[in-house]
Amino acid sequence: MKRIAVLASGRGSNFQALIDRIADGYIPAECVRLITDNPEAYAVERARAAGILVTVVAYPAYPDKQSYEAALLSAMEGCNADLFVLAGYMRILGETIVRRFSGRMINIHPALLPSFSGLHAQRQAIAYGAKVSGCTVHFVDEGMDTGPIIIQRCVPVFERDDEEMLAGRILVEEHAALPEAVRLFCEDRLMIKGRVVCILPP
Ligand code: GRF
Image (cartoon, rainbow, N blue to C red):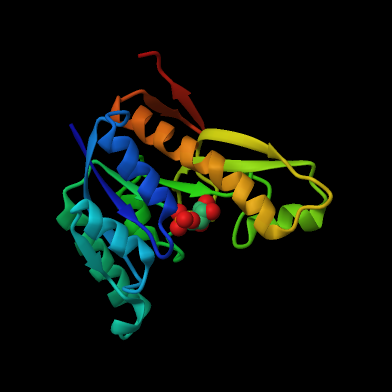
């Protein structure tokens, strides 16, 4: 059984989707840790309710980025996890961490990459006038939302949409896509060939 650790900074609805899909047997894994940079995050409540250990690595507690990164790296190493899932983790990870966990760290982004990377992806899609958007689960590399794509799911964008309406429609798909990607990883069915992720048959 694979061990997964989740990094989240806020609400944690994607984290909850993972907890639920582990509990119902869809994902063959154990969630061993929540790591957060925000002790106030609602994700922390969700972890407590599910009996998952929480490690807080709060950015302001460290004198500089380097020591924060060192603390985060040691927290991550302490998890002994096979997979790290960034589920609404709002900080960019340094190169050391990205390289250390290359091929076993994934992120969920609320747009169809490579469109609308970075912050406020839903707002960007509306402002651009896109007619479809969606979500992307991808491996994390050194770039900003640039790693090999595992799964994408799309939703329509309507002319009357505001950011919140589109975000809600995308979130429904995130809650399906992220567990699916994690399940594929846990079943050893993802093979990275350059930029392309091949999904192996069961
Ligand atoms: C999601 O939209 C995710 O794609 C983005 O941040 C949001 C986190 O939501 N990276 P939640 O904390 O999982 O509810």
